[in-house]
Every structure is written in C-alpha cells, then in structure tokens.
Image (cartoon, rainbow, N blue to C red; front, top):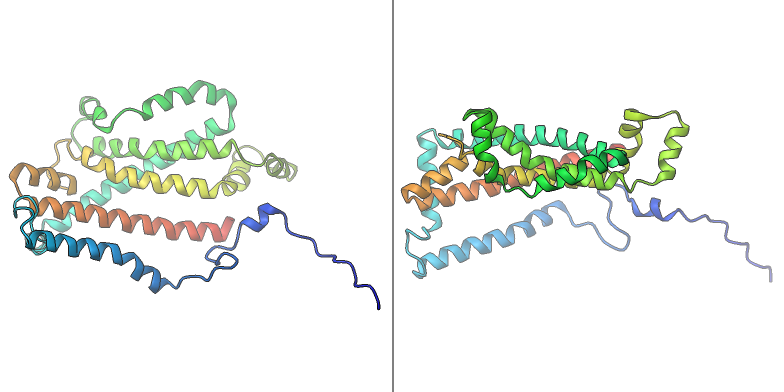
Length: 281
C-alpha cells in the first residue's frame, strides 16, 4: 500500500477568507431570493397597519388622537390634488440631500485628517467630540443670527447633523488600518492623498458606508429642526403646521412619508455600497 501524497494546499489567510464576493452567500447558507426578502420586509409594516386599523375601529383612541388609515390616505390625496404634497416632498428631499452631501464631504475630510495625523487628533478630536453632544435645536438660534432664514441655514443645519457620523466612523477606522497594507502601498510609490484614496479608504470601505448611512438617517432627523427656521413648505413644516392646527391625519401622513423617504434613500445608498464593494473590496 502506497502512502498518500502530502496535502500541498495552502489555506487563504483569515483576512481574505472573511471578505466574500459582494452578494455571495456565506458558507453553509443559502442566499435568500430578492422577492422573498421584499415579502418578509413587508410583514411587519402590514401587521402594524392592521393593528392601527383595529385600534381605531375598537375605539381605543378618538379620531382626533389617532385617525384611521383611510383618513390619513384621504389627507394625502387632498394635498396631492391641491398640488402641495409633491412640493413638500421635493423641497424636503432636496434639503436633505444637499445637507447630507455637504456634511459627508466635510466629515470625510475631517475624519481622514484626524485618523491619519496624531497631532490633528490631539488638537481637534476633543473639540469635535464636545460639539457632537450639542442638540440640533441648540444650533437654530445661531444659524438664524449668522446665516438668516433662507435655504442656506436649513441646509447647513442638516449638514451639521450629517457631519458627525461620517467623521467618527472614518477617523476610528483609519486608526485601525493594517500597517502592512499601508507599507505595501508606499512600496508601490503611493503617498499622501493618493495613498488615502487608493489603499486606505478601500480598506475601510464598510466603515465609510456605515457612517454614510448613519449620516443620511441623521439628515432626515435634523430636517424637522431645520424646517423650524421660518419654513413655509416641506415635510417638517407640514408636521409642525398640522400639530398647530390639530390635523392629526396630516401629521401622521408626514411621519409616514418621512419613514418611506428615509428607507428609500437608504436603499439607494445600499446599492451604491454594493457597487463600490464590487469595484474596491
């Protein structure tokens, strides 16, 4: 009986085993088809809608406290016929996207500066960390005083909210980039901004995308505070105006639309994440 030949296979290093191809199922798991994922994601919203309808039908709350879903839908149709609903949605979406882009760009630059330079971390990290704890409404009077009541103040407030998640995730992730990877990049002649864009940012891509998604959610949260600044249109204005006028149906409509728009924009960012992973990860 001849001896079996030695096993000459070389296992991949743990780091390369942990990064599967984007969209690939994990070992031992079958990938869930997209229609099944969509159907599963609709289960809880439909249950909440049924619970909402049952609660109003049983008289647990008065129609003023909690109008039935049909009344909220009717309020949306009424605003749509008046030509106001589309304007509210468009103006709020425009403000959020502009503020998000501005905050994300500045947050990425500041996070890279603090994450790559020890001196910058010592100088700026404590101050930025302190400003991160300031509530959104605390910025409103200052922005009114410094910038005025136009669109710039609203976009700037949303940008402030978007800045901190991107800054925090990028700064922390860059401090933990594999130094051997950085040295390999320098050996190929990369340095400075080129090293950051070619080696370091792709290495922390999951953290960057996580920060961007958190920043986008924060942008929608800051929208309501931004539209306190003498707004006459927008979903935040619709929310506050409906509260002042006792229109709970429109108030709930604004909340539902904010939730839907937040989810849609997050899904679009998720598609961008998968495209970036296919290119760089």
